[in-house]
Image (cartoon, protein in one colour):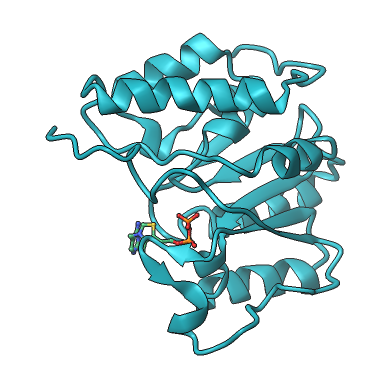
Length: 209
Ligand SMILES: Cc1ncc(C[n+]2csc(CCOP(=O)(O)OP(=O)(O)O)c2C)c(N)n1
């Protein structure tokens, strides 16, 4: 296995934006024959979160994970090759301790399991599990977070609120002005909002695979 990269790369917001814009171009020119989910507008927040991530930590992601892969040390050319091969939606690089799932809530129980394994092994590393704000409203998220809180497992949850679940307004869905983790004070939960220039999936142009 490739050794974990230490220290983690010091990427700037512009480095992240440039990577995603390059993938957007590739997608809109129909060179990627599979869905891509791009980040934008959350660069400062995610860079700040990664200041608390150690090389030996695990990072768990959803269908939208390019920024986490880059910040966890996956080489840009390796990441781009996987995306070009159509695997953006579920990028897994176990040698860099990055795992993703395109199933809503898919990685949450896995985060619990890794957290439990770390605790049983007496390890000092942690799990950082990213999810969108709609994912965070599900019963599965509630149970996984509750279990880790009650058993004091080393799992850090990050709720990234872009206000939408695909095209649906999350607050309208739940008939609420305030979502579950907004303004919360759980030390193991980081909640932030951002506004993306990209749609939920793709890069703005309809591409026929
Ligand atoms: C089990 C399951 N149901 C439905 C989907 C389709 N789906 C993909 S992303 C998504 C919305 C998730 O919204 P949110 O958690 O806010 O994440 P965002 O993409 O906005 O970051 C849905 C319903 C899926 N991937 N898996």
